[in-house]
Length: 449
Image (cartoon, rainbow, N blue to C red; front, side, top):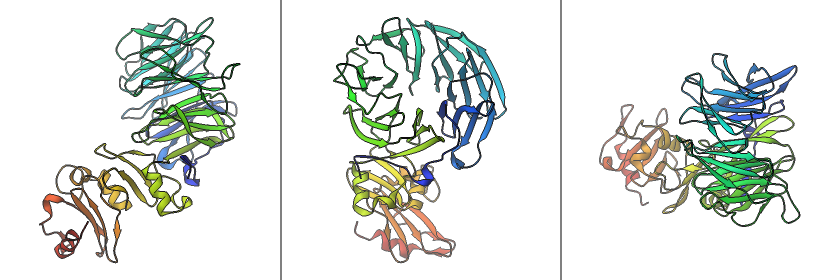
């Protein structure tokens, strides 16, 4: 297992025959924009059934950029091209068109404030899709070529001037623009911005003095940090993904593959050879997944496995790599925010600094993370039980997982039943389907941990 593995299994690679010119993702669906037959189409793939036939919508004009704004009644898909912003409501097929200037370039969505931003010469246009109107613009000193809106609403804008380029930073609910001049001769292809570290990442071509790769700028000082992070070619996409407590930057080099940069170390920690890689990428932060364009057949979903850490080390010790691939989700933090976990076919792997890395039976993990069910009270089982303190134990007639403040047990009844036992209720007697299981639980509670 390498330092950073991106595991691609059959079930983890939905692939569709469409050339991707635009790509966006939310928690429900993947949105592809591309030319099909006589004209451009918007393809929408529902994530739970991604291998099924997508919903297809013909679109007007020649849009080249897409962004989505999630909502309770379905996401709004904004398409930019031909000097117009067209906002599609996929559920109703309603389309609202906002005329803009022919030089419109750069599109981003502010999820919290429910706004779309569009780059115009010397201005950022602001569109409120719920109100159905264009708001006052924000003046910027140059022509925007790319917009990136972070989770907190901070907007990073790559500006193109006559001689050099710059980055404009805009905080939420303000029209004040913070301008960061780039090093002389630095003309990046694309940018990424990490709100956690305050670092700006710029993809650059090779020159006489430095290789192709990523230039890093500190936002607070406006100064360059270290040398170029060398990649196997000039990246065309820079996509940040925060699996668990780590932040990684995926640099996509079309026709070559992905370079994985650890933001804290500002170094490449892994590479995924992908000759099929295209020039579009999007991240689903909640699921810990990366979607990248396949220049031959649509898009692929990549679920990263962070190697070198306790999760990967534990998996290497217990099973062969092919038995654990692919992960069912990206790494994420446990409910109390203290450590990391990741879902696999074999169960949920939890990296605990106190108890070491453990594996939970899938049924116990689902109850621990999602259910309020058998655990007594209104709080979730995760709140009541704390983190697991050992692997799920499989005995001849039951499964049991011990937690910081209790346990879960699956009983061998007529229909298998799982019970979560919070610590304050250790002395209680339990009736399941009319059967007294107090003796069984007493045995389990008396085991040495």
